[in-house]
Image 1 (cartoon, rainbow, N blue to C red):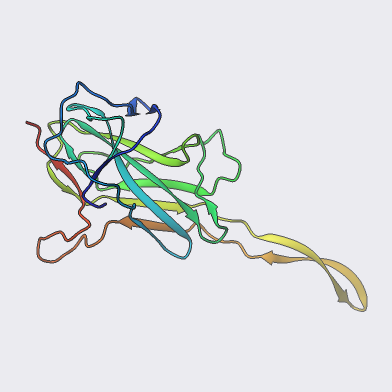
Image 2 (tube, one colour):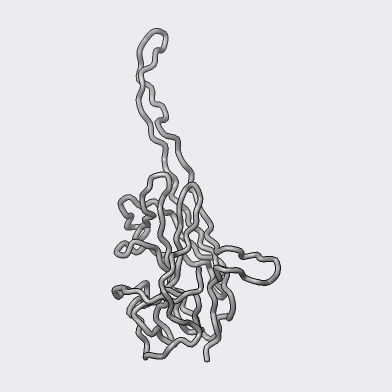
Amino acid sequence: MRKLVTRIAASAMVIGSVAMFGATGSGASTPHAATTTSAPPFVSGNKWLSVNVDSVMGAGSPGATGVCYVANTYIQGQTVVFRMWGIDNLTGKPLLGDASPASPTKGSNVQSVVIKDLPGVSPNPQMTWNARDGYFTYGWVTSKSTPTGVVPFKVIVTLKPVPATYKMVKVMVNGVSKNKKVINTPAIPAKGYAYAESSLSAGTGGLPSPSQLTINAAA
């Protein structure tokens, strides 16, 4: 995630009890971040899927100074809202999830999206599919007890398994033509990808660009 804070227009939206967009606060500024021009998101993946992950500033204190910010630097007390979207590379279709286990989404292809290595968060949280906006989200509500420093989080995206398809063919058995069921396309087991920002292990204690998510101490 590049070190940036970019104002973007967005409609009001709530993830669980976390107010994501429209977090105007009381007008307090965030001294650790400066407004910059927009930068392209960091995208990665493998042969199975392409994954895009970023974070926006949600509700909390001190509040955001605008409607919505893409950011990777936060202050204790602010809410980090993770977002993930992408493409199933085998089909070219967008990554889609289910609204709930009891409410499957037509064409959904994502089994789970899990965030790992958030300090003080256990068990590892799952991101929730937001059908209206077309991505998965999770709001991490930080506090003054949240450790400060770099958070080298990982996002594990797992595609649903794809069952095999079959077709009927004519075969000769002892001179008699019979129908036989054969595999048309083989089954594909669940496939995943672990998104992690570049150079988590620099070996020197340094963190090259792009930087990791950082939590700063509250004033």
